[in-house]
Length: 399
Image (cartoon, rainbow, N blue to C red; front, top):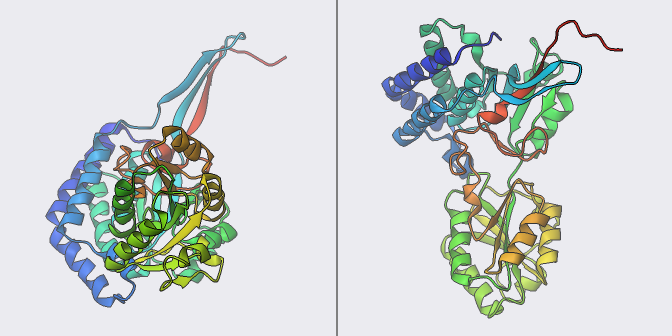
């Protein structure tokens, strides 16, 4: 796609802000159609699907924030003049065409598109069928904003293909794809990796862990656990697994208290064999696959570990590579944990719920990458660029 100047891109975004505010009633009506057709028994997915006035305000804020950010394209990364007189400049450049595949959340239709467009990328939005009416309404807003500024609506497209059509598109795309971001569970990621012909940047599952060290402040630990587990169960940064050091003072009483607190919050629990000696009414884990599972539900695991090294080994084996927390008053222990745990975000005495572009100061995000190339963590505006070398000479030839 043609490189656009910053003023024009920001004009599109300002127009989009005005259209979102003007059309909020139509957006909410479209969302109600999706909600009426959805099975409310899937609470996590249903929560993600809801668009209300607050959510529209959040969409508007996301567009405003990206509009105010510096244009990421054409930024000089390095510049050097070689002995032969060649000047080599490395600048940021657009990817080209990005495809994102996601479920349920209509706000992704705003955040993904605003980031891709400001970074001068064309974006193909493959939303889930459960959000069809909401996504159509939002993309119509984008198309109006583009056309009012003299741009083709091809910059932002909504794809409404079914699974077999998506598979065929990935195998034989009708246009060049430069990057695909599957935003969902393991099955979706495996499906895209199997069929895609271009780079795939994984936005992986959560399955986040929290380790309570023997030197933890218990009151802080309980506060963080309850927030991370119950504040928003539909988020990929929600807590699933709690590991407690058996050398924690008053270990048995505290495990029992935690079990009672979580049950009072209607969290169903699974426990390992050691923990079941303290919580005999809870179901014991019988299938190792549970340790790999992202719940997205009022469900959690409490396990016992003998020391921090066992906790680290367990996290590195089973987690989704997303987020992990250590609760401890020992800063040396905390740093060792944070250095050894192989996750995109590691925390000391804080909730995993902060793994979010807005909360981390990145702004709007396309996804949380659990890949190590090309970026790890929140995918913000800066991360939706690649690079290009500009080499300036005066007739030099290589010997």
